[in-house]
Length: 331
Image (cartoon, rainbow, N blue to C red; front, side):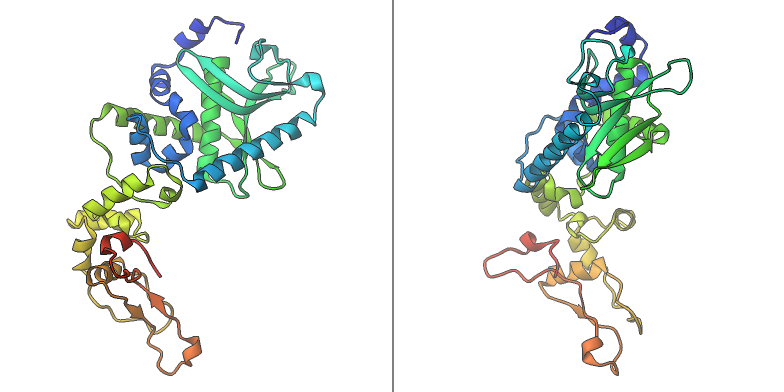
């Protein structure tokens, strides 16, 4: 890609912090930055260049995102004349503002390499011709997550390194109706720098972060590896309904394993109305004793069809199966 300024001059003007962050993190954008945002262990494994096993579900998700993005490109091209869009990185500088849409744009500098879904030229209403390209991102889901917004901010962050200006907004096109949402980027860019800073600190450290199983494990290529480690450690995250706050609370008490947690259960007086609150210690106890505990509200006069039943246990292992293989399951 040619530009109005030598590449070296642009790179030299990068802030030291941003240059450091980009050197450490930019290559991982193509390796599913979405997963890095969800799990510190996955980020660590990527930094260690570990190779996982892709599941059918994650492959299906990848194909869905790719198909949605390609359809989105077609829709963009249909809205402008043929000479107002291009695919790939144009030979002209972005400062020339020749195209309204640039599809599949690549940022390729000595310290930056990333592929952006698309760019859109936003024309200024003033006479200063202060026009600016903003990033576009295609997301197939109907509801946008904070990670979708952070990925858009990451696109803006990398784009700023090649054009010298940071976009203030970006756009996400999502859902079955290809709805367009304009996203302010100021606060998100600060969060992106924080995430990249955490990755930089993680790479500088020789100690792996604490392993915590979470909802992302179902689609992660390292799920078998992490789950086996968690089983060997009898980690509290094997209980799917115990959150980070509760886990930290137990850790502060010196409780780090499911077995330890099981000995903390004390029967409580059940509320007269409503469902019984979930009790992780009871589930841990059920796993230790290999039992099913059934809790029902105190309402002897209520008709049986209105009685609510709560299961606080994993399923009982079949003959020949170990209890460890069933930890974290629920009925």
